[in-house]
Image 1 (tube, rainbow, N blue to C red):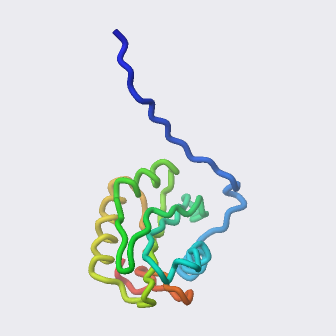
Image 2: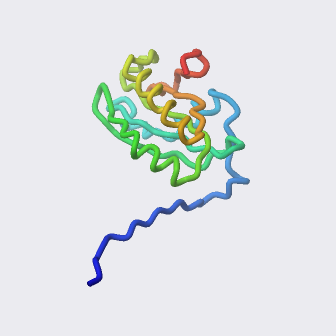
Image 3: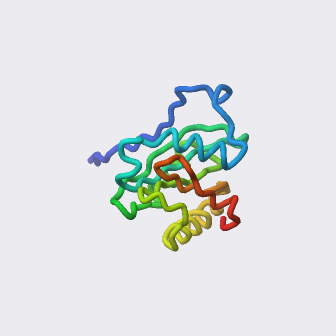
Length: 149
C-alpha cells in the first residue's frame, strides 16, 4: 500500500544577476537601502522586521520582510528567518526593524533577539553584520556602529 504524503519544494529565484546587485560597504549603505524598502505610508504606523540577505562579497541577494506587528512590537520567528536565510544560501545578513515612534534607541527586547539570532547564525556559519533600526524620517541606528553587536 502506497502512502500519500505532501511534497516539500524549496526555491530561490534571482530576478537580478548578482553581478549587477549593489554591495553593502557600510552601515550607512545598509541604512539608506533599508529605508528605501519601507512603505512610507506604514513606517510610522506599525513595526515590521526585515532581513537583508547577502552573499560572500556582501552583494545583496534580496530583502525579505519577516513580520509586521503592532505599534510597539513585531514577532520575529527565528525558524522562519533561518528558513529564508538557508533557502537563499546567504552567508551574511543585516537585520532591521522600524520604530514608528521615531525613537532610535534599541529596547532590551531588540538587544535580546539580536543576540539570540547571532548565536543561531554562528551554528550555520552565517554572519550577522548589523541590526539597523529605521525611523520614519529616514534616520537609522546601527548596532554595529554603536558597538553592541
